Length: 369
Image 1 (cartoon, rainbow, N blue to C red):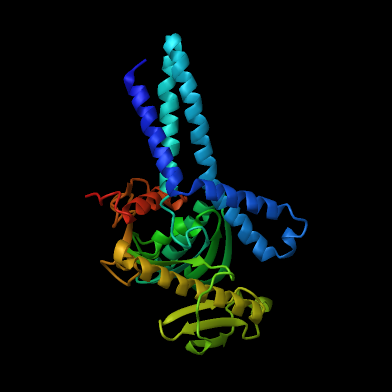
Image 2: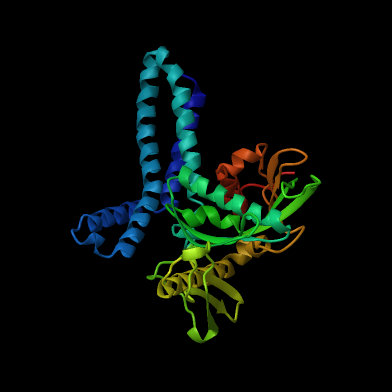
């Protein structure tokens, strides 16, 4: 039996033990057990909102605990396989495959371990705004909305659209939606910033190349149990008539709500519900989430320098470039991560960008040229 196999197995074992300690595996196991006991109670679903928050917490814990258990079991199987291979050389051919699988699982787990922010296990409130580029920018904003929806579907996350304003000619002016699932905010928070598209405009009869921009903003969906201090006197409330498709569907009351947090200039709005009360509650939830993210960024700014990645308007500020002309490619301006298929990215295959951002954020991956 080759010495290399034993060395690789020892290295995996050491990495796994370090990861268990850093993740406080025993405490997470106990927390999961406690949650499962709560969920078994007959009155668990009486409070739907609280129950959903608990379910998300359970799923987040399982995304860490189950791969660790899988690695532990895999190491035990590997030890048996190595011992048997000493006596039966025909079994030695199975060892490299087992080692490769363990290393792959461990690498995925180490990446998830980077999602250690205070809000990373919460849902994500994502807002997309069309910026420079006219109708092309409106169309581009809607393309991004579809892209994130497809990514969420692929990962079995729930998506709830809470606000959308369509552009008269094509696309959207803005949209806000919530993505709920294990570590949704942790994965998506790096998407905050300007996304730039270069293509031959389908809205230009001369077939000229057009550059369009859309701004993406991601905040954690902070549950009511989390304290976020907001002085109501600092918030201006405006009501307006929600936009509709026309005819009998036009909303004839001022049910839409816009909140402006005067000290920070943050503006949120919600018009999806017919009830002004529901729109107001959702708008306040969005505002709490935006302010929670600002506080998180303030705590992390010295280490991660996250303010450098915030959304700005215009050329030179984009975090990611999407090209359909002269060739098809997508490249992240921060990490250098590159995909040579524009359409696969638009189809929701953005996990590589999310993973590379996590590594880059903690300095584990240098930007590529």
